[in-house]
Length: 383
Image (cartoon, rainbow, N blue to C red):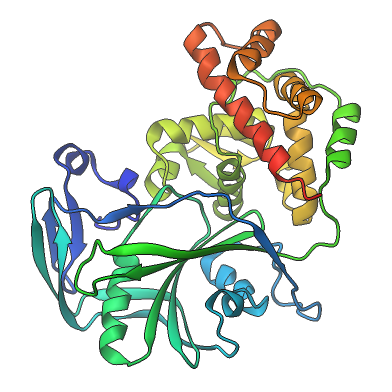
């Protein structure tokens, strides 16, 4: 009842009154108008390629279904060592532990509040010690807009009191073969809101085949257009989150819109939009389970995850470009070597008389998705 990893998960009462909650002991919490979340940045970051040992049979980097597996794969592929610039790293701390006792200041609407913590429970996904530092890693196998600073700050406070080495706070997110590392520093150890992003890197496991313009052009020339499905045209700009939702469905089996909203960083409206988007692509379907409408992967969706990560990207391109609005937009993009303006994308969509598109504002919102998905395809190109 008190686990809110993202601002979107806060109860309506909290949202209305700008409240947040923090644990201060094993069974005690403090509620107030203070700022507990921090937004992720989403700057373009070059992807670095790493090798994965071919002799391993018990760990498959193309079949990651948990946060512990994310960290294990990142360590074995040398991503953590490269990111921290520590040649020798040992896994030393993880799991649940007591926070010990400390106090800190947190920003409120007006001024600051001093908070005292006494033996609250914390959990560390991964702790790796080298000659120079201890890196504490918080890992998520889904994409979000923000995160709860406490997940980095409480372990930081605990371990700065326990050892003399530098404590490094790292947030690791994973989806669709991409490991995204962000390192944050607290410029004031006694100030919850003093974190700053100081470094970030993306990694993927090396694949000898890379996507180029010719591959995508060949798909454009050969792909057959499918009939538009009787579901709303997508209004879900982040294609990464669409794949990520499919990954979550694969892990859980079925998810209701309420579960998607409650468990992941989706608003109720977003949950509906992204659920419709995965249905539009044929990767998921809506069924009844105990009189409740839930999402599950289709056979096509299950087969999608039997592919290698490279082949999933190719299949994703094919799924998108089998729809006329996206195919015609990418053709226009390639013919001009520049993204087409929104008004031209709207005209493409208007001429196709798409399902349940009956107002100018609807076309405008959906055109944003068409442009975003096409940009995602172009962003895969590695010449």
